Every structure is written in structure tokens, then in C-alpha cells.
Length: 237
Image (tube, rainbow, N blue to C red; front, side, top):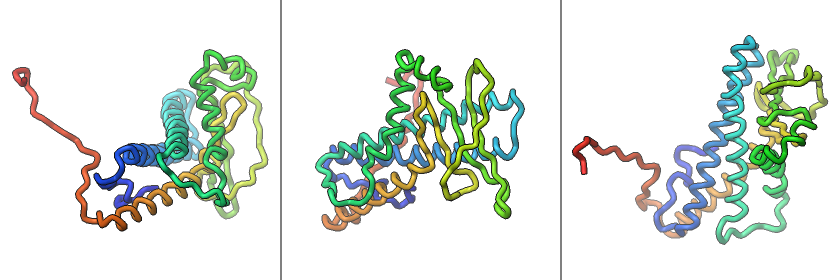
């Protein structure tokens, strides 16, 4: 989503300090979204193509939901920062769907999970766990198409889960796609949100590039992502 030379990775020091904080937050959110989605897609693709034993699945489940929820949290943070970006001029005639509309289910499932002490009845009524359940499609063969619709439902089940094969109007953009997290009857589509985030990142990069060029800051030194190592001993003061 972000290239190594992305302007979001070289914010000039002359940038408005408050805007710089928001740009850094948006950049970090986008990086976490990309990392979490890439790792999650790789993991669940392996699960679909090479089904694990029950014991192996219990070992894999934390990895799956760690990345799924990291993705959800990063999308919600991206939404908050983007909506409240200082002095952002928004185009009221834009045909793009509003970010708050396309991310509303991410906010909903985050709220349900964050307040599970008050939403436990809702979670139970919809047959999900506190972590929700993850569904996706993985294509084993493309010609002719042979695919698997997969579900991971973690935690204790009171009844045997029913098998469903929903009609999905989606065009495959990868071997594994239509990755969805459902909690308390609310479903968030992780695959579908990616293009919306990417378009806004591209627009932010264009704006930062314009700022750098218009203010002759191309050669301005920037300091970013610093690691500091200092020798330390018990005698160090």
C-alpha cells in the first residue's frame, strides 16, 4: 500500500506539527492494515489448502485472530484520524463512498468486542464467540475453478455448527479473498475495505507531494523511525 519512497514516510519538519501527528498515525495504520492482511491471508490460505488437525488448529487460531483484530483496530483508527484530520478540505461532489459509511461495520464489531460484558447476550444470540468467527474463500484450482468456503469459529460451541454456502457476488482478486469477520451478527469484509484505504492513502501522498514541491522542500532533511541504542551498565548514571 505504501512504497518505500512514499511521501508519508518522509514528512518534512516544516509540516504543521498537528498535521504531522495525524499523517504519521494514518501511515502507521495503513502499514498495520497491510501487514495484518498479508499475514492473515497467507495463514488462512494454508489452512484451507492443508487442513490442520484439531490440535494444530488450536495453535493456529491465535495467529488468525491476532491479525484479524489488528486489521479491524487499524481500520477504525484510520477512520478516526482521516475524519478528524486538521483543516482537511473535503470534496462534497466526490462520487467515492464516505469512509465512515464503508467502515461502519468495523466500528460496530470493535464496539461489540470491546464491551463484551454488556454485549454477551447479543453474541450468544447470534451464535458467535467473543472473538467472532472468520470466513473466507480460497481457490485451489483456477481452471476449472475449485474453491473452498472456510469458517473458523473459535471457543466453546454449545451446538454443532450449521454449514452454510452463501451466494457471494465477488470477483476473485487473489487465491484467497472475501475475508470476513463476524461478531454479534455484524459482518466486516476485510477484503472489500482494502481499496477504500488505498485510494485515500494515494490522495494523502499526492497532497504531501504537492506540499513538498510547492514549498521547495524536496531536499529538506527529515528524521523518521529512529532506533536509539545506548551502552548501559549498572554504573551508568
